Length: 145
Image 1 (cartoon, rainbow, N blue to C red):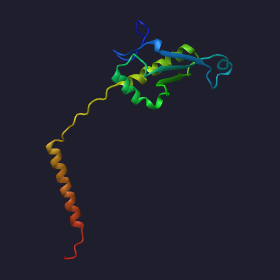
Image 2 (image 1 turned 180 degrees about the vertical axis):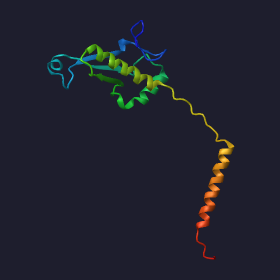
Image 3 (image 1 turned 30 degrees about the vertical axis):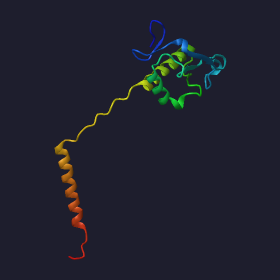
Image 4 (image 1 turned 180 degrees about the horizontal axis):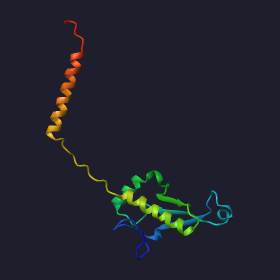
């Protein structure tokens, strides 16, 4: 997850500089007794998608579109982690979540290749339709009979 220059590695070409990340520690809620009441282990990680230099213009647009519901008004993405008792573990968890989220958001969707139904399958489908239709037609009431 880390490179030599301590950036977060999203893909081979995309790296998020730590200088662009804003980290804040706070007290976590929930059970934990005295420990949770005295230590600030919850981590809030913020990264501004609109002003980042880590993404190309197309990647930024794709990420802004896909992550729109999760973004604040200024275009920043906020991720929190409080599942561990250690601040360092929570920071790692938040960074891992950020990397996974960005990797998914900038992924280029695979182009759909149109496929053609084989001729035999098409003929058997039409045959089945004709048989079904004639079966139904045979059940109809005809007043002239």
